[in-house]
Length: 168
Length: 314
Image 1: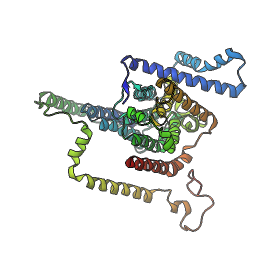
Image 2: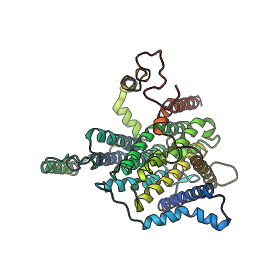
Image 3: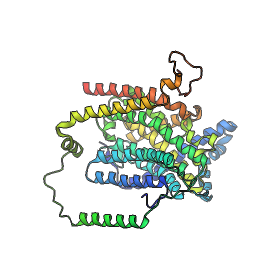
Image 4: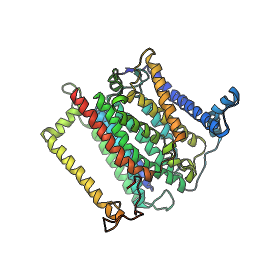
């Protein structure tokens, strides 16, 4: 996509389109919940990603023209070869026929087979990761108490550096 | 579980939603005209006032779209078109009485995913025309989404938790005795707030604020503008309508048939939202973000905890 589009917004939303297709793929596998969650999370994520990409890549829709396209011919050739290889693989593979019945809740089955006995470990790990994210944001934020009150935390400046919506 | 509607319902759905959006816009136009130049003089005047949105629609069809320098027209068009499409797709899981076009096992998540699509669409509309004011509007909407989306998700989760199912039909069925609004009032209020946020008008109209010459919509003309502004009304009707199966018992009610109850409740919520937009001032996002994260999220989490304990205890 980067070889085709010279706009961060276009590239991001093309990526979103690809991810929505993945969500539909998952839906077609019968994993309803996962498919819809992929659509939901990827939409939000790509909308935010577009904002961040634009911030860092400085290409505000033509305000600062800049081409990100390079090696067009090679990229086109490469992607065509990859597509043909994947499509040929999908068509030529002798797919096995289904054994057994569809479980009543495929999402639960998938979760069990992926996690198995490690469910508790993963949940603890998830909590730890979340705590890490919160802690690093708290440490990195410019809205911390040192920024609002200065070095002397006992003194309260009349006009805090960063104002929020809540009275303090 | 809701009954599946016949196939023609899927064809009728977009038109029905557009008609409902038009009704809501008419009521709003009536209120606006009454506020501006006093009560209507006779029935003809009232009808003429109520037809303002229809006249505006016809005018927009006749008007040429605007062109700006170095605009990303494809993205703008896509964004404007996504808003009504997302509203219609979200409406597909909305039960009319006890019948809905489709009732997937994950209807509540589907509804939320479609709202997120509309969110992305509005940013695209702000971005596409290569205009400062519309871009500011788009970024405002993104910031606004960050403020209301999480409390909104927790409110949806709370209703699903109460029914122990993500299927909208099951959520309605779980309210045959007691409506969820009675024991999840916080989730209901937060849901109403985010319904306003999703249709980006009234207190959450900052992305289309007057201070930036109606922001996101500033460079839109013709059908593009109609899609965005009409889609906004459709989103409002959809989100108002969805509060009925989530919190207000869906088609449950004495005496009247189920469809009449759905209609009555949706109308009541819609009237509340339209009034709220006329009464409440615009909330600035830099001011709203902090209360949303520091007050609304803990409140909705506490509400979800309460419901979870009640459900476990059942």
